[in-house]
Amino acid sequence: MNWTVDVPVDALPELPPLPPALAAALHDALARPAAQQPAWPDPEYVRQTRTLLESVPPITVPTEVDRLQKRLGEVARGEAFLLQGGDCAETFVDNTEPHLRGTIRTLLQMAVVLTYGTSMPVVKVGRIAGQYAKPRSSDTDAAGLPSYRGDMVNAVEATPHARRPDPGRLVRAYANAAAAMNLTRAITSAGLADLHRLHEWNMDFVRASNAGERYERVSGEIDRSLRFMSACGVDDSSLRTVELYASHEMLVLDYERALLRLDEDRLFLLSAHQLWIGDRTRQLDGAHVALAALLANPIGIKLGPSTSPEEAVELVSRVDPQRVDGRVTLVARMGSDAVRELLPPIIEAVTRTGHRVVWQCDPMHGNTEESPSGHKTRHF
Image (cartoon, rainbow, N blue to C red; front, side):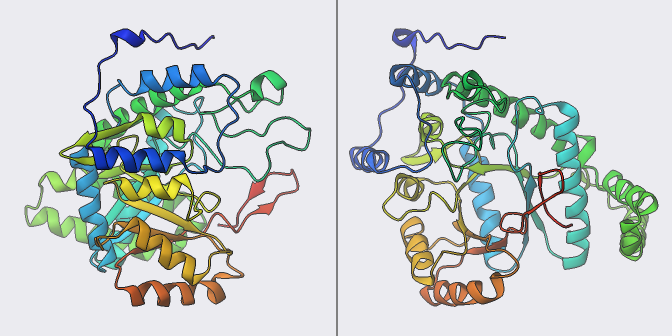
């Protein structure tokens, strides 16, 4: 299948102009050094692709983004719990209904247990509908080919043609993300999100899995609680629908900048509800941090083992100058061997500033091991 982009530039609608001060700040942000960007072979093709994406409907909407910001504020104040999960890197071939249903089902099943165990609302955020790019430690792989940077940039097949960065994939990424977000909204407003059904699936897990035996007592308690609620006549829409938000790493700026939208003088990046800055792109003078500071979206920042307390404080100050509760989520990805030593000084330094951030643990990155087959894996 051949994917191309034919852009009728003259026929595209003009987006409303940004206020002068915001336009100048955006220009400055995008002019800064940007790490981990694809080496596109045809700059004009990239420009045409961006022009096309500037005219498409957004994947998310400002009201949803604001709702998530409110929920994360509750997490930052200790009134709720954050659960985020999904694929390390989504692929176009796996952007199917069964795969998406499985991801959403797993997240919601986990949320049921967490809600019961913590007696708190659980804010559910998926790495979903846009996680199609990935940073790499090297521009080339062991065979000397350009590194695979995610389906948004090139293909995983180990051939020179497949690994050539293709701007047309930005359009495919948008189309796949929009389809995934559409299905996510449908699923979470329909029967799959029904609390009783989720509990039944958890009970199936308990019966079918050796690991599930550890959760048998909790499942039994949840079952009794649900039967009590049913007997009391509690059966409203909150038991059948759920809020699930989309997030991905704000990495490929040619894609992200094309999905910027202005709403009431606030700049939203409507490729997702929440975006995060990766450990390899959090340079204080870089484009990713400068762009994030302009957005109305809640922002995550990955903190690897090289992060100092001073750097963490400066990152939070730049991205959250207005001190909005939950505006910033700091994601520790330091590895189990180092986190006890490295994270407490960062928490103390950020807390002293008065910023109320969400503290999140990433137990996957930083804890990889290589299996006998050569694949990266982690202990569960």
